[in-house]
Image (cartoon, rainbow, N blue to C red):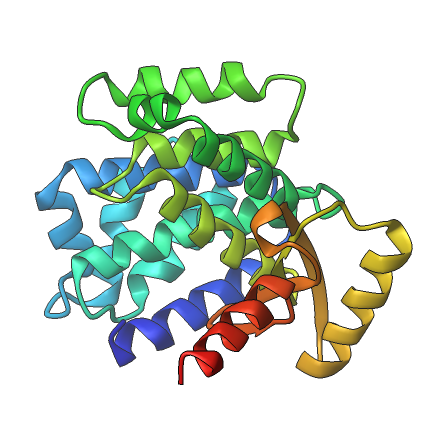
Length: 262
């Protein structure tokens, strides 16, 4: 990510967070805008053109997305007024803001947990991953399939995020899309997600103790996604971003075998 994009994304996210009346429809319109920009090189070029005055780029938003709500148009005008490193990163930014808007719209929904749960379903079903991520089949059909799969089992924001992302894969794997979405939602809610591998399910008391301990260590709120993994044998393996805390018995045994091997 270029420095210009970093600044543009920060400014756009701040504007979204400060906006009033952000709803799920706002998120839905931002996802639709991302698809429109992705499908038109002419549109993406016009919106990301650093040589064009900001007001000219905002006029393009008004012309193309005039049917959107005032809230969505306002966000898009803020986005295009910023300077982005490339048209591709502008598109990434609109997509990120759509995900953030979904998180803002329903703050009580366990979006990270639901996205994580669906990623585990994908990991356990190669045929489903192929159906959603393969080149065969229309993107609208893939989005509809996700909506059918999640109907009644996930919140509206999580369903919108997943169905929208599979409609706009841009060469990315489904689990990669879900992981990015989880990070964005966690960032919007000012917390960090830890993926915990355990041989057995954790009790509520164990989850609370672990979450509190990690929150102190990382100086912020930490939520847990627990993966039941018999390979760890006992103990826990915790990953937060690039940090790995491996206290599993399997890791200790591997270390012992390495030492014995000399």
